[in-house]
Image (tube, rainbow, N blue to C red; front, side):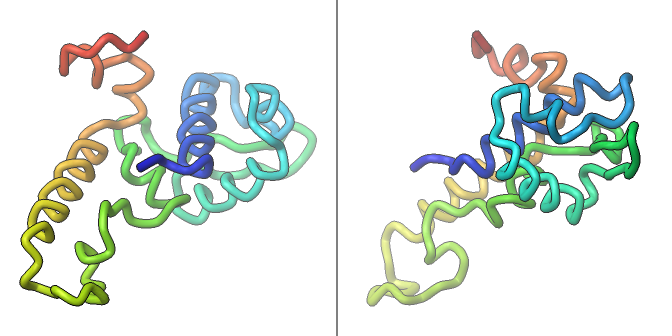
Length: 143
């Protein structure tokens, strides 16, 4: 199981914007210089804008900027805006295409794991990431 580049690039762009917040709007080109494909980035920033996580400013000094306090933007919000809901199995989402349906022995495990992953992502915000808090508080080496 891997997160797609959509989610990875969106999170990367949001962290870039968070770090550059004091410098005002950042152009698409500037954000792309951080190693992200410009055309793909434009699509992702559109999704983040529709989710009200970034705002865009038109004009010569325009660009994209974070639209809320960093402490109010979670990893879950960023990933859901670009990837959709995070789920480990279709049956967790109510898709009963499996022949076992509600009698499946693993369905509750998938639900448990999905719920815990989502809870963890909802508990980490951009401010935490910038300050390395999610890693320090969990005893994980971020390097």
